[in-house]
Image (cartoon, rainbow, N blue to C red; front, side):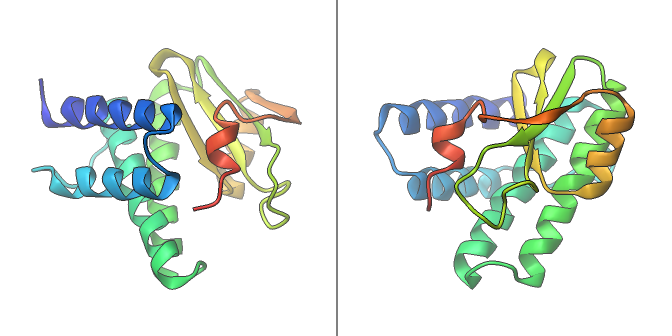
Length: 163
């Protein structure tokens, strides 16, 4: 088992603990960040597999969440990490050629995120990603995989819980 697979197994165990109520969202985010940073790998410059893209997505998402928590949101560092996360998402979608992908806006309690954040489902990888990136949104719409409706997130309890 390679390092990426180990990380995703550990992350799945964290998710299960969070779902059971054994940890808070903040604890989950902290442990996920620790896991990403403790690996012997760093983000891949070349994303030539979906697995590498998903790792980069998780790596930058974890750093963005931490930077947002530390700085009280909307810092340059946070935005930089979210841009890198969106770059990984774009590479994943390109690798998949948008096959078995669906996307839609999600219902959120946050007025700031309403009508901006959308969910991307990768059916073949049991993966859920989120973005506010307009460029990605346009690509998803052009590929015909974006549903023009607002839906409840697959992970609604997590998305709408503050941390």
